[in-house]
Image (cartoon, rainbow, N blue to C red; front, side):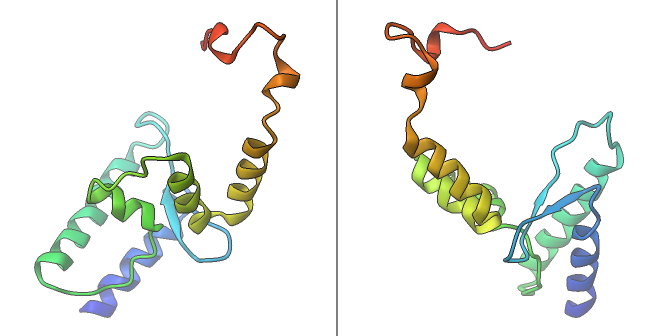
Length: 125
């Protein structure tokens, strides 16, 4: 039964319309789309949630290759700093996390804005 549930979860996570695979470590993150774009996505996420909840209740350890950040969100253990968030994201996509880190460390805002301007001076639409 345990192998059947693990296989079921893994097969769903490998469907690109529902999940996105990270680079290198085999973790998946749910795809972010609206209900209008993919109405069956909510149903799939509910099914996976029920399977995971059942496994927790029954004390069944199954293979669910979700990125660790997803389980931390389930437990309300959100990353509170940029460094924590970057570390969690690096477990999913190390290359993208390094690019974000390098861009952050460059501090190129002085090259973009005039001396008396700051990012808050521009509205976000």
